[in-house]
Length: 269
Image (cartoon, rainbow, N blue to C red; front, top):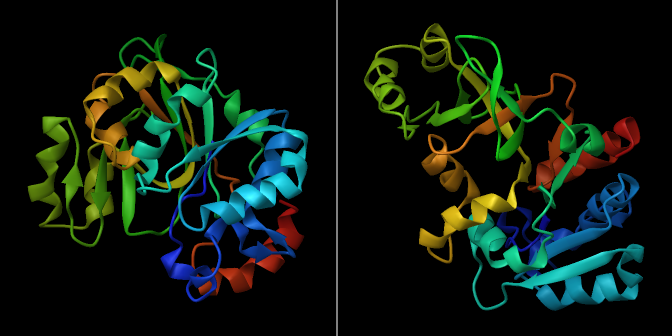
């Protein structure tokens, strides 16, 4: 699935007349870069959600014969559903027997899609070192300076989220939430690391098992996917996959548009 429904407010004034998905970098729309990379990796069915200037996206795909792929539109014209709600609405469009590869439309990277999609989903038991659970979702993460970090335990299982500026912690684990008082007295990242926790930035790229849709039944139409992951991290295994060689550019604002040309020429993505 390609998340392409966003308003693209950070790319104004370009997005006053077009959707973010059709903003051009390297002479081609962001949407085309992601679609072709998925096609080259062997994916043949893609779901694209639409809201802002939705008709332009639909027309663009039709004019290009869907790039020879089975591209299905998830219509969010009436209301923008955010990432979790958008995924929930699109559920009937997926093959329920396979994990869903999810990619934000405004992300460029050097990621090997096949390597990530086929990555080991096993979660290792901390006491015996034997795999004892399979992750229902895998999140591509990397180390980079940011305001917000996902928190993982030593086995790279998701256990929380922290805002390094406000020092707010979100977690369904009481022992992680209890650290909020401690980090208010010291350096956020180092304090959490002293407790054996790992902190990484999320890439906007992840896999999602269709078995998780049943947990979304209790959620409203509109919600962020990261909130869903954090709410359910103690019920099902959600694993972070860290890639130290990942080079990623979020083309979500005007200053990164200027960097996109050189990024594309350097990494060929």
